[in-house]
Length: 290
Image 1 (tube, helix red, strand yellow):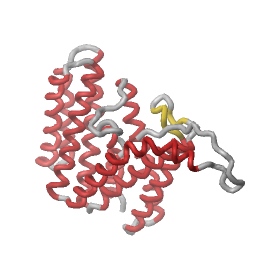
Image 2 (cartoon, rainbow, N blue to C red):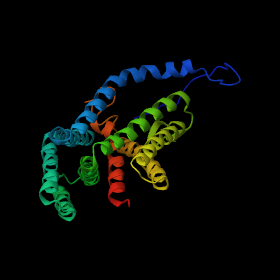
Image 3 (cartoon, helix red, strand yellow):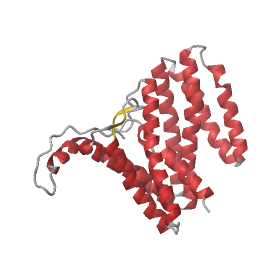
Image 4 (cartoon, rainbow, N blue to C red):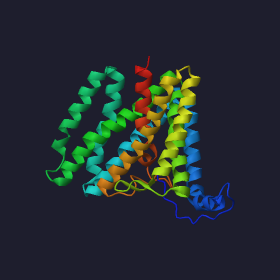
């Protein structure tokens, strides 16, 4: 999610609250109105299927995984001017290979071995030029990262539907508050070379609000405050870093968005960018926390 530095001229209204909030609302209403229906529908559908669990939830995860693989494969081929159909079939093998290895073996070392072997032999299918090398390197880095995030989200459901919902909540709060505050009050850019629209003010507000929500949730689950507070901050920071990493990928590939499947938002990766590292971090917390 992109936030934008504000370009407002604030009016003095009173010595107590000198900012004309009507201008801030007007500055944010148009993009919010354009994105809100898609965002709300996707959020409610995702949370509903997560709550149901079973096959509906499995189909949600499978659809997200397939959509990400297809979307990134086509975006890579288009950016690097490589034959899209040929490389899409190669990438779909990885789409099928990862879940099969995951469910059949059930052992992390077997999973890592199978996936690593496939990624290593990918170079045999790529052209021996800069575009081929770039695509191979991106595949070696991006696909395992995406797979780890998607299947971490899947495994969170085994602890109860509340835990994947927590990951979604942290991302939604961090993204939305960063967008609104950054657009209305943002002045200083966070990482202009990577994401020219993100502001420090928006990011800080997003981290604070998302961390507060995560800390409240964790303490409600009987996690001690001394553990819940730093874990919540880490989850909120992961949401910001995931967003920046996806922007870094787009800048390197000279892409505006990875896809157009979600009107007003871009592609699946443009929406799930923050959820991937948050799901990984939350699963690690549940596995490792005493």
